[in-house]
Length: 240
Image 1: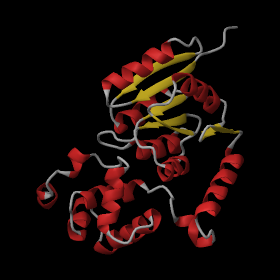
Image 2 (image 1 turned 45 degrees about the horizontal axis):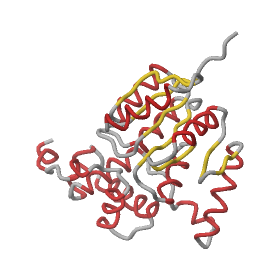
Image 3 (image 1 turned 60 degrees about the vertical axis):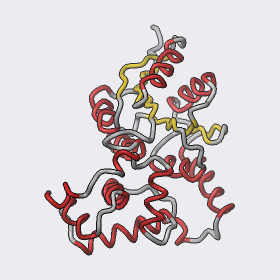
Image 4 (image 1 turned 90 degrees about the vertical axis):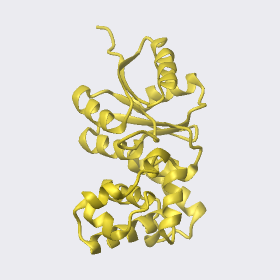
């Protein structure tokens, strides 16, 4: 009986890079691209419909960023492995991605052979972190613990830092980047002013920042909020 190919979904909003990925993967007899999408919402929907084995996920995408999409995909379908492919060479970003549910994180100049091998590894339930193959979740947790110990005075409170933002916290952060006040955020999301403040406190703690400006800068620098979205006016919030 022939071995079933590894079924792959590409989530990438730059057509040229997406086409390049497809061409690389088509050369491998054990890999099959089942769909290509160009935004995070489509990635979530396509995974639910197609149940691919592996998703190649960009971070800076329209509608829903790649980290949010990864979180929702893993919540709905734990068996699908996600590899983050991004322009952002940022170790803290990598840790966010791993804690969100990604199985590997690569900058987009990764060698095709390295990416192909990583696809096979994550499909087998392994993790690929900084070129190191980890056998499973227990080894990943050990790696993360060592990472924290090297960079922080690790204690019980430190576990809150670099935790993935929840989908609602991502909504709040996007509105912060757009310049919305707490009152406008509450109106836009249909939540109380106190709930907004609670989300803000959680965002600041997770990002290890002190104010809205620092949080907004991180969101833009890491591609969680696209520049064209950040420039949108808040008038529509007031009207809504």
